[in-house]
Image 1 (cartoon, rainbow, N blue to C red):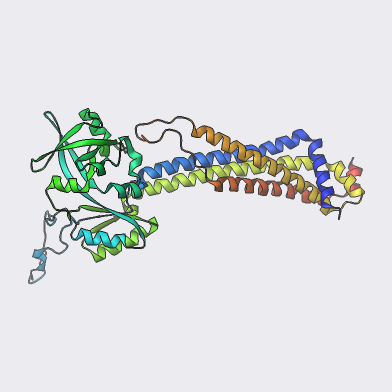
Image 2: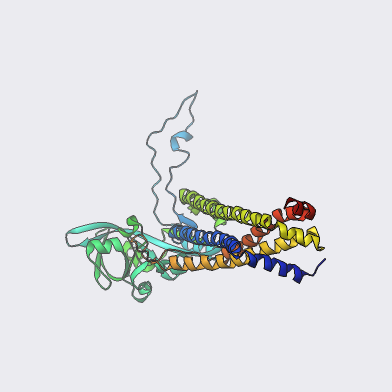
Length: 420
């Protein structure tokens, strides 16, 4: 068998002698891989953005007090002779406080659980936002701001002011952008709120947040946990919700079932709370993969056709090589080397093209009120896309060269010359 370097030299000569065809084949790989990188980077970036709107601010488990009707009603406990039928109309839930019973011990146990990344309490109170003669219905949420920032990226939704203002002053408030617009308020202004008992409180606006959800931005605001308890006129153990973030979101369903069985509470997992969104996210991801891999397959067929034609045009060269002592295996290796060179060059150019266009898209302004913290189109620069691209470029060109090279291996030099 001739030396590998000699086979490489012959492959290089073939490629350079038909430089236009070589360039066309390499460009086929380049555009196929480049479009794969662009599509995957943009579509997965967009999917992550949409997922983040829900997942970043949605706890994996929401814990709150049950408010369900008693399963066995008192009348059903009475013994009746014969085959009597008890019919109860308009069953009402049992009157219960909104607060979670023994919330602080439960919170401590959750934070010590190895599966739990963090748990943060909330105290929710219904209020009226006062603006002259106008009273707007609203909700004030008492939070531990450090935990909200750590677990739910709360600072990403602050469009004006400082998220840490709740720690600096007890009566500071982070106001929804919709409320601020309706009341013509900005950071540093005073806000009057009134609880359901008619007691009024003055809050300082330390920041304005915008979640992109009108129902939230038009009604809700956030204060320090102790301030919310003060507005309600309750003690420090009055907690209406506990939001739990897990290391693995898939643990949400079994853990929520366990919590409901152990405690007299309602534990709502993220899968149940966002079933429709979860389905939509899966479909978007599937479409992204289908479109991207279709591009790769189309590019692969194009590469195969070009290399196949290249081999047929090299029939005389194949005959000469075999007549001078090269074996069919040597001929096969020569054309496989050509295919791999085309795949490597085209793949590297494709990665460069994909990254350059992705970076260009990433710099295009994208401004919308629904996504206040997003300034450009989202791009995902996951290295796995680039690794997949170069592997496919080499793999597809190898197959595209191997299949016709096998035919070239079996060609008879005498038959080729006789045909000429």
